[in-house]
Length: 385
Ligand SMILES: *Cc1c(COP(=O)(O)O)cnc(C)c1O
Image (cartoon, rainbow, N blue to C red; front, side):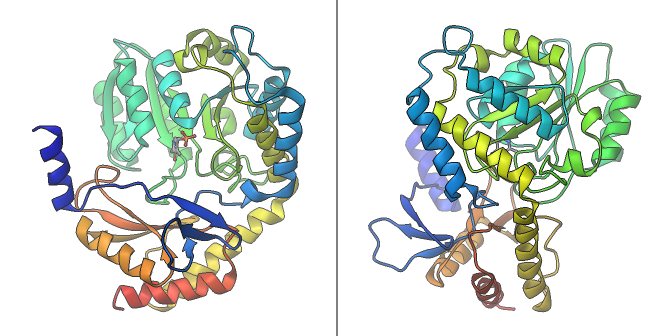
């Protein structure tokens, strides 16, 4: 199939994606540029704690920019190793309950760099089927054997470990909070299996860091398993309101990754303004647990309104998927909601498995309680309930 007929086929299936330019306004409002329509409530942002517009994050970012300029100028193993990275890595290690940490340009780069550094030909990776695309790409780059287990299914994971563990290195990769389903990984069970079968365990906490855990250290903190996790990965671009990513691990493992992770070695260090924002994001996350409480209260309010109307399957987190099925139907519903002033993403294949297209609502502190109640009512009416 040539590129053009591929595009046409996607369009017919309702899977064609387009970029929509937007502008953000206070109150979680989103204006679609060029359109006169009134702004929409944004239910697709991962800026859960609303830190991207927090005055301390902005002023810290500005301070670092003025202190050190707009770019790092080189990769860190060359002359680009600004002292501020070390400061941020110490903070990350503390937040994630690990000895040490290493920054990456983005979460995508972290996963694509770390996984191939840890395992290779002759080794095996056990990966949850719903793991993020960046994890898949990292696995493919590693050339290790890839064994997928059914989503959150520990019996299936154990069965696969029994069959495929082999004698090389073995790595289990999970997300602690799944980005499209909003459900949590049974981490303690995974830890037991990792120990029984002597595997490394990598946990992607992109959506959990800042949102869960007493200090915002994620679900590995909340579940008390941080010391059993070999590689804790996460991003600054979601609840922490900044950009970039990290892995936290033992000091030895970090030393190893500095020498082996190609997306670290061959890429320019993060800009000072971004480091300034990330430092403030972590500080606020640790020192202001009330922001997390506020978020969870908003989530509870939205879910209660849905449950009253009979939408019961709302899951355990700030990410709330409403399963629709057919892509075209999900797209129609998203369009209908847009007419009602609500921006929620229709998540379609290949991001999720065929036949499981859904509307994804993510709740942020930008949204007022009134907006949440109003949206729940609109959704219920759009679903025809
Ligand atoms: C967003 C996300 C990433 C990628 O992080 P970026 O910093 O946006 O590149 C990786 N893993 C998961 C689970 C994510 O949700």
